[in-house]
Image (cartoon, rainbow, N blue to C red; front, side, top):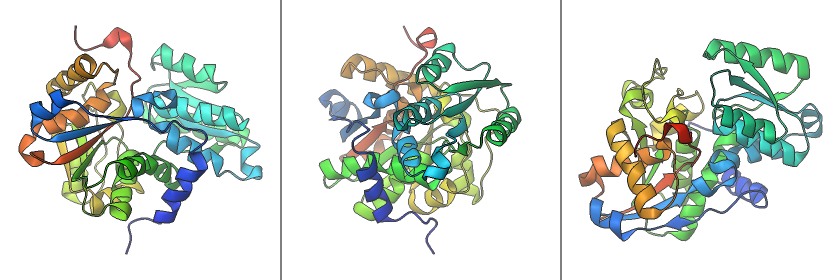
Length: 317
């Protein structure tokens, strides 16, 4: 039995549906990195995506599928990061309201970005309970449709289009690596590989200080993220009941890395490739740097998931 209802056709349809709204982001290579890690690397640069992250793919796919009766009341979600901005912009383009619940301690720059897209920002206490209860109240008052940041098949299918673009351009790919937080990107990536390039092995990249996905896959059930400690603030959430079964079935392994290596990888990307990525993106390269024997002499694609960074908290000089 398949762990999901998402089909090959759903991913193709998502690609067609969002094509006119998103950027088809570039894939970069670097001889420096190839020599450093002993394999051929391809960097899929979602840091160049609209709103600076892959999240715009899923948000656009979800918003585009709302029926007239749903769209009229707009959309709502809770998010402190890239999904908030992605949903706000997707809603603005569709011309519908967006209500975004954000913890009061979220970076001011992110709150301003969400508000700048025309969304209604509702602040709450920085706890999951507060986020969910505030969201429920917003949905009750507005009638808006809740778009989950990752545990939604429309979101997963949208995120899957990132890997599909890689498959269409890079052939005979041995490995595909994506960071994992809630699992929307990794589950979509795994499905794309399964359907379009079955010989390509998919790995998840996760901080060792927020290794709930690693523990969940190992134990066979979802282990929630509790008090995660990592610089990769985009990877703090737990897997969902839609993302976990896909990851469990189709992802070869979740590999964890220390923040020290992630910071080194992030700095190298900035220095050598001259592009800005956030720590959550650098985790994927950190995996290759840490587990070099896993990938030696292979063709490896890495998804650089985003480039939204708090410049007051850059972890290197």
